[in-house]
Length: 213
Image (cartoon, rainbow, N blue to C red; front, side, top):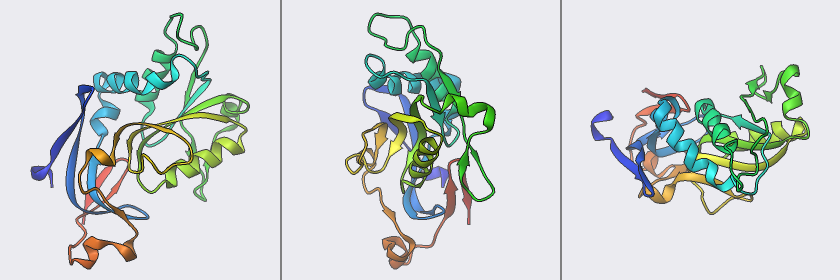
């Protein structure tokens, strides 16, 4: 798979890029035509800081933020986002505040939870939700339900990649979208055009990476 990877760079900041591999992949719910490798953006401190700077722009001037809830291994980016939002400046609304960066846990029944000592940073707080990738929307829905359950106020959603940039009830601030990847498809297994075309699954993918089949 790696030998057919190509790079997609952010137009306004070419230093931010991700590797893309076309193929036939399965997630826990869907089949997908491309694997997007955003691990470098999540784990490389220099890249993560550049990403955080871009993702912070929509919130700097007019969105009050108390907590950034991080999903899918985006905690490094979340910490740098907090740093960006707290910078001093007349047009930076969060200057002088404290911003918490949290990651929910998954319970035995698959529900997202916050431990008791952290719930105070969610209840009645203004929350930005940060995710790596939006393809099926399952992660977003689970996180929204969790934040609402603990009484948080969701003021923004940011993503490294969003497969549905024009098909969401709430605006999502995304760096890359399916418009950057020609031919990108997300299908339910029983409607998968790749399966119907006789193409075998190559790998199972999740937020951490992929496992060849």
